Image 1 (cartoon, rainbow, N blue to C red):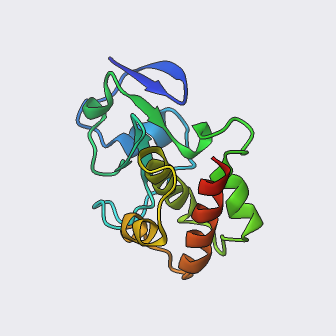
Image 2: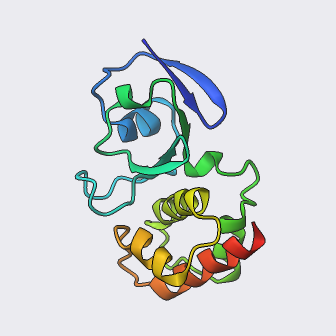
Length: 150
């Protein structure tokens, strides 16, 4: 039995400690906002926050999250009104939307560590999150906008 702190709630989970955190979140806790992309930590679709730091949940074992705070896209703000979520809407960032939870969570990790990043810092941090639709310029503008609100 694993005890995990997910989105401000404690959960007792009967799961293999080596199960990828992504599958535990999606299949057991039904937090399906976090997406499966490549399964190798390369695309960023599965990005969540672990103690405020952006990580790839598809390659992180559940045991690595014990005693830490996990935040998924569902837990970023109870009403979807985190400055990043609002900026994403205002800048009309999503096209297909598949990568957007991972994009937002990676950006949240950036803003947690660097509240007012430069465009270069944004591009460097976000380089590992792939978007098939190519919304990168809108993503950068939305992150800059959100950083000005914080």
